[in-house]
Amino acid sequence: MDANNKPQAAELSKVGDANELKQTVKETMSTAKQSIGQIVETQAADTASANGVARAEAMRRAVRVGNLIPPTVSFESRGRTLVVGSGERVSGFANQMSSEQLTQCTFLYLDDSQTPIPTITPYYSSSVRIAGFLGAFDVWVTHQLTEQSLSQIAFGGQHFDLIIDLSEDGIHDAELPPLGYYAVGRGSVSETDALEALSDTIGTFDKPKFFRLDTEKCAHFSRGLEGCTRCIDACSANALESVDNKITINPYLCQGMGSCATACPTEAISYALPEAEHIQNYLHQLLTVYLEANGQSPVVLFYAESDESELEANAGSFPENVLPVRIEELASVGIDTWFSALAFGASRVLLFETSSLHAKTRAVIDTELSAAHAFLTALGLPEDCIVLCRSDSVTQSANSGHVSNVCPDIVIAGSKRERLAAALDGLASNRNVEPQVSDVPVGTPYGRIEINTNDCTLCMGCVAVCPTDALNALGDKPGISFREQDCVQCGLCEKSCPESVITLSPGYNWDADARQTRSIIHQEAAAECISCGKPFAPASMVNMLIEKLRNHSHFQEDAIKRLSMCEDCRVRDIVTDLAKNPEKTLKL
Image (cartoon, rainbow, N blue to C red; front, side, top):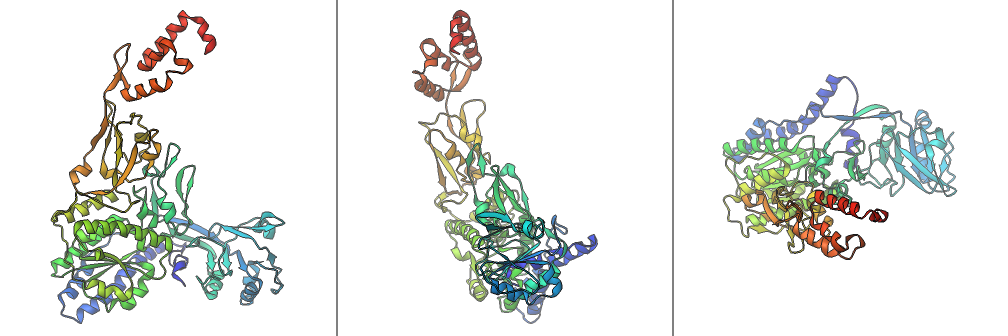
């Protein structure tokens, strides 16, 4: 089965006894370490290399903590299947079915072919739309310019459970189609696998829920303004969308690629199988033991579980300083984990790439690599300290001769941004990083904002929309404070400013104190009420309102003075004026 449909086989488990499920999950999580470990142990036994011995010791002693029984979502399938494609292709596929399989299928021709199917009358439509997932597919066809539900036409409205798509281009537009959808026509799945699915995919199935979502941290939308859409853009399975201005993730469509969590700058989405902290703790153990065992220039090789067979085929020829680390998907860890590995002593970080890597996932990794290379350049390290590589280039990449970058006593903890900052600060501690603020690619979530204070009225619109508290009000006086460590360059503050005085300034500040300290970026004296003397608003805002409203009919003569009063005195002045001049009530 093609890697694009890996979750069809590897991630779905038939629901059974709870202890059986627990054991299955345990075995699944340990398989990669055992198989790669066997290769490592065999290699170490056949060599006197210090690196080989150190690697075997590191992989034996490092303990990986994970979610033994992760949260799951359940699918229920009765096997009701739609087979769709050209008449010739559909008919040929039907002829391979048993009589029992034929009875559970509905056949849809996308052309006007009259090729027959034994005992079955096919449906016809040139326009088809599919949505849903295993056990809950909706299919719409167009008949006489009207879109209709095919399941309603065929059998009274129940969902289709499976889709076997024989069309050459595929009807579903997701790079990673949903579970239960077999894109046979475009070569993602073989006809044999699809035929097996007709019998095997009947019952109730569980799939891990790979993510955690905290919308309170999300930088997508605030007060009518759209900000970050990185996670939506990153998802190969089209599982994310904006609903009522909030990011939602359909757990039935999500297949755990991890690109959304890696792309998310605020950790509103985090990967949960396993958590990044668990991977980083494992890396710390692995590299510490390797170096203590006199291993030299360790190279961390991250590989996706679905690519294990390709890695195993080549692992025996890899240099003995290569430490393979299995992760669920290649994009399930990002820049914070890569730099943690370097800070713990790795000389290089390699990302094992195969032909199954989806375009959207690759785009996320490329974006992370662009930022990583900018950081490496600022640190005076070669860009190829962190690179994508294929099986035939692992040896060359691992033998580059880079020196390990051990950061003694480094503590990497906290949020994703805090972990990255700790790793970068550790690596920078023994280096002279110039300039203090280095460039990063535009669009990456690091930098600060610039405010033209001459035209700022301190309306606090920017503070109101900031999703990370990078911007805060001073509280006791008109002003804005800023903490650069928290700024994710989402652009909400820039969009919210009515005076257009805010601009984003991407970059990375290597001065940890300056980056982490909250500083005042604009403040001014408060205007005092001309009636009671109470401070009540920024003076620039009051002056701006007076200038804009002096010709307004409601602010003629003495009424303009109310703009220079606090809210209490303003109300009292209005009431007093109406009592003296009751005819003015007719104008209200």
